[in-house]
Amino acid sequence: MGTDIAKLIQRSTRLEVDDIDFDAFGTQPLDPNALRCLRYMHDVEGHTMCYLRDILVTRAHRDPEVTAFLACWSYEEHWHGEAIGRVLDAHGEDSGPSRLTTMRQHLPRNDSLRPAVFSALSAVTKHLPAVHMAWGAVNEWSTQAGYGQLIVKANHPVLTELLRRIMRQEGRHVDFYTSQSVRRLGDSRAARRLTRYALSHYWGPVGSGVMPKAEIRFLATYLFGDEPGRSAARRVDRQIERLPGLEGLRLLDTAVAAAIDQGLSKVRTDRRREIVVGPFGGLRDSWSSTRDGPVSQTGRSVAMRRNPISDDGW
Image 1 (cartoon, helix red, strand yellow):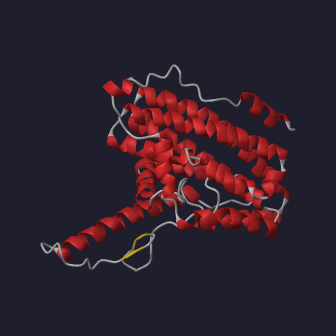
Image 2 (image 1 turned 90 degrees about the horizontal axis):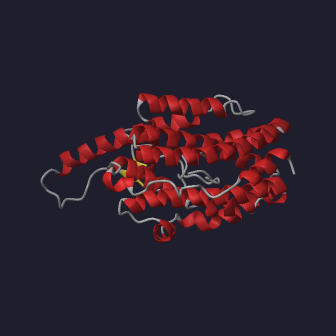
Image 3 (image 1 turned 180 degrees about the horizontal axis):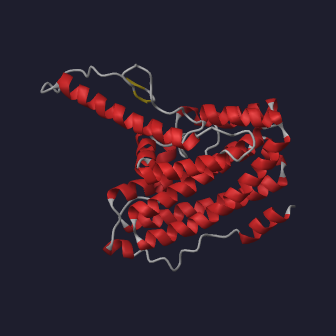
């Protein structure tokens, strides 16, 4: 087993929170926007085992370094969710198993088909693990950036310390995904082409496969919609572009721009609805929508694609 993964395993541990003053949130609570972000992050961190399910049905389970990493990764991500849950608890919010159970009961109908889809894809191409490793790198980079932006937005000393601890562990996850991506993509032109196609056609912000569209749009615009946020998104994109074959994708900045456009489209749609319906609230709405989200003035859906690839991260 390589030295890097051996060190990662030795350092893998439950997130240390015994000295975090969660009671401080009682006297200095977070604002509603920060709590909304934390609910999203809690739910996605708590969904890690379901993402792991999708990876292990592929050829990735044959690689002992990958499976060793995934064991540590899933363990640490679980405790990230638990720690965020304690912040929610301090605000009187639901968290933990009861919240996750409700979430999993409302997953998309195609969620149960994901293991079969990934297993079939893995039988067709040996390069699916390369896609997963690059996808994981993208998600971990964007996760770290999201936590960093929330630290700035919330400006709360206790939350800042907690999120910085989470970010340090996420940094080790980034290191593994990146090293695997560089090696796998560097070794194969086919892996580079498949990964670039998958990311450019199917990637969405972390949680896209399981979270409601409105929450995805809120998180993207709240954390990354202003100029500092857009700068953070572009820094993530520059990191992605250093991976072999992924130059010029601009994944996160493009996703943020799409979320902003969706928000503007929704505002315009709501205003048209108010004008048409007016005081006659019982009339049937005359505005258009699609299953995936609001429709722009051209009639095309502006919602992000549903993510069929493993969405590990937040």
